[in-house]
Length: 95
Image 1 (cartoon, rainbow, N blue to C red):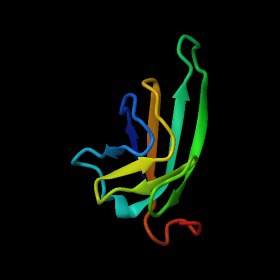
Image 2: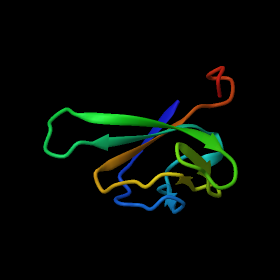
Image 3: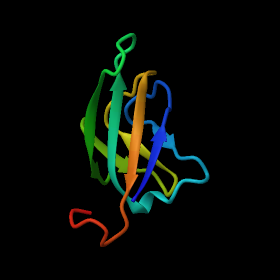
Image 4: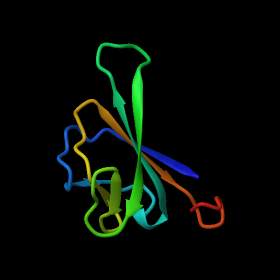
């Protein structure tokens, strides 16, 4: 399993979030979560897991965008982190 943590800044729903060149291809993606950091409050955050879908993602979903990025169905704020988890086939039964 590999984890990629992105800090994309404010991104509007439906806009591609590109992966850095060293990231594995998006085709191996199994899980996406957005972690919202509550500014000014130490050790406080909320986690919003996204369902991976095809086509245009709705709220609560993420879709692959080529081999080098994802599109979320929700806005990402400037203080959000996007956590991308890659799971190889056979490594996890739900992938």
